[in-house]
Each structure stands twice: as C-alpha cells, then as structure tokens.
Image (cartoon, rainbow, N blue to C red; front, side, top):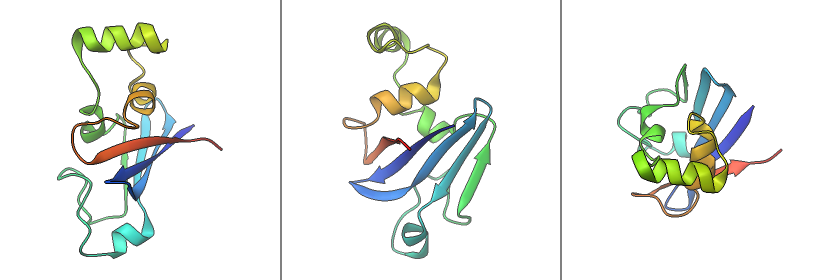
Length: 108
C-alpha cells in the first residue's frame, strides 16, 4: 500500500491511497471537509462525500502526469515502470505542477 498527502497551495486537502493496483481511495482531511469555504479538490471529487473509492487512479490525479516522450524520459531517468501511474504521481507531483495541487509521498 502506498499513500500520499494532497495539498492545495501548501494546505492539506486529503490523502490518496493505492491499496492495490486496482483499488484507490481519496479521502478529504476532516478540517478541509468541514470548512464550507474550502473548495473541492476537483469537479470530479466534490465535497458531497468525504471518501471516494475507485478501481483506477482518479482522472484528476492521472491528468497531473506527463505523457508521450516526456513520460518515457521520466520513466528511464527515475527508473519507474511507465504503467505505474501512482509511482509517477509520487515522484513527479511534489513541487512543480500545473495548478495549485501537489502530492507528497507519505512514508510510514
């Protein structure tokens, strides 16, 4: 199982967990969820429920990943299988992403 903390402009929004390669969970942080002024992480993960489950990496997070030649280069350089979407997210979405969302690995 791999876990990541999801931040919006440096503020904790929630956690993203890969339980297995076909089981993902996104859970809003209690404080973020309770604050009506805080926006949802994406339109596809509205704050109507605190926890979301999916069989694939949620499209919002998948779309933070590079594609094509850039992905191939990152795969070689970082030694990550191109099919390991969660691994790519943990390795590449920590600092310089398009937008306000960053993803930090949680090591336990």
